[in-house]
Image 1 (cartoon, helix red, strand yellow):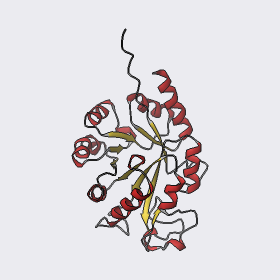
Image 2 (tube, one colour):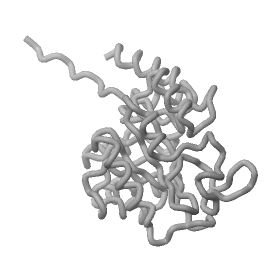
Image 3 (tube, one colour):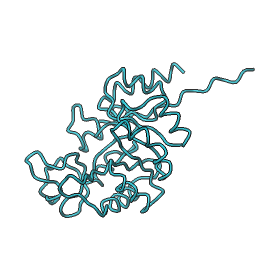
Image 4 (spheres, helix red, strand yellow):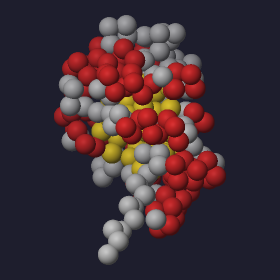
Length: 241
């Protein structure tokens, strides 16, 4: 009897900043809504307030122009959750915690102390297999590896040239994944990454045609604003075998 054909790997659906269509992004409401829409994981952004509280927020500035890095927690808008609260709202899903630490921004942490704080909080709240810590800043994410090498980490990148060179760098540094911009993902990149045991999670993929193409290529994770479409597409492709 012939062996059964191997099943296509299942691509994870990752809600970008929570389910931000119909809810304010990076809020407890958006994270809970992502779970209701069938997301496997949530991606959220983390910054640090002037009183050293980690909070879920994407931009350096608040809507009124104040800087998160120069504002205490009790003066932030009430919809911005501390990271601990955000992690609790993501119960039942994996969580990608993206550390925002751009050298061009006010509040840049050149010592990467934010990495130490994130590693400590995340490991206290989530099992290692339900979390991944990512950043565009290679030094920031490498500090995570030094603090707790059990925490899965990922490099985020946009430039196709950087993406092409990223697999060997990620594997050598011990990162679990790379998170390239979706247009840089192709079959060659996936083959090289998978040979090196490095996962590929593409961002931010919202066009249904792009989602389906990446799923059929075997992309490990789709970071998207459209969880319902991604969930339906991954289910259909899986059913196709």
